[in-house]
Length: 451
Ligand code: IFM
Image (tube, rainbow, N blue to C red; front, side, top):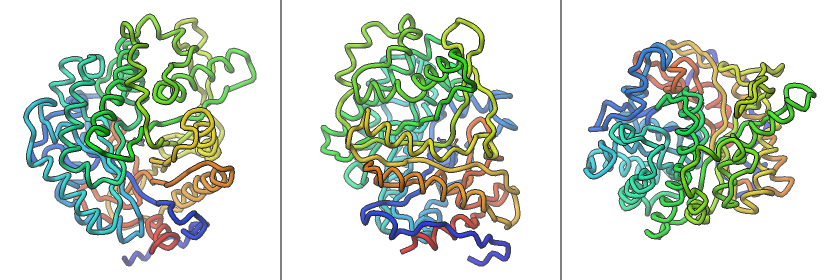
């Protein structure tokens, strides 16, 4: 694709630097790209959250997004033409079951079947994620993740999807980022449903894992293999040398990084977090650990940044605050700290997943590029990918079983509460015309790993 202003930057690695079975991929999610107004998709809590002024930048939403619902074939061509092996996509619960339970939207299921078959026709491995955040509104009305019944609702949804495409996906994950689904959305209130309530948070943190375990059971029962859990991690460091900051950073790490791993891999929650959350937990929560801890086949690590943490000066749980760090930052103000990726891979391997394959299921950076035009030079993204791939190579050299690297994201898309300005794509999207233009990073990747 001709582009007069393309960067000459090259990536420092090639496919030959990796084991033969290592996969390079890219990731997206349904609400962020498909267009929730198409194809009989039901309303989700992201539609209503975004319709509430002040919740998303410019009250933007995913109703059209990248119109991937209609442009999916062109998008899969971009993945194939870049030389990528694998595509991590998610299934919209509201598209498949518009009311969350009961009636299935045939158009929705047909769409995902076309998509998966389209990947296979192009030689792309389908990596499916069942839930990437758009909870059907009717289930949200019934308490959503606060309601224990969601484990049954999610199991039913899993069965519908698995029966249709479970035989053709290379790997499946239950959820994307349980910290975001629970803490970010029920404690910090930044994402749908926008709550700020510790009891709601504790319930959500548990019910998500219960639903995960039920979903794993359903997929196993249907004979599916290669089932995993995808979690996001943030490297937590004390902002200064005080004991208060050290304690705050440890608790931040517990909530963000150790809680969900602990449930799934050790059938236990971390004591330091429980010390604050236990009074708000669902009754008899510990009896669910056998379901939650159902064996998985792999761990997915999403990694973006680190946080410098200090005490907020109160004694109210969790009592943590953060300060701005000195490192270079992405357009979202996230510090670029590639060493954190090596840390999480080797730490999770040693303490939790213990030899299971690890997939880096998301890593990438936001930039603020023009919303129109054909200038798609993104040397910072090329450097970012290089720095993080170097850390994966270090982890592999240290013996960690890393099997893939998925770049977030294939194309610019709806960045949730931040709207459409932060651009994460390897491919630029003009949101007026929906034209796709590969950026310099796409070209560099093609040169490094193209087949
Ligand atoms: O866009 C999100 C994605 O939905 C989940 N992981 C982080 C990305 C960047 O914020």
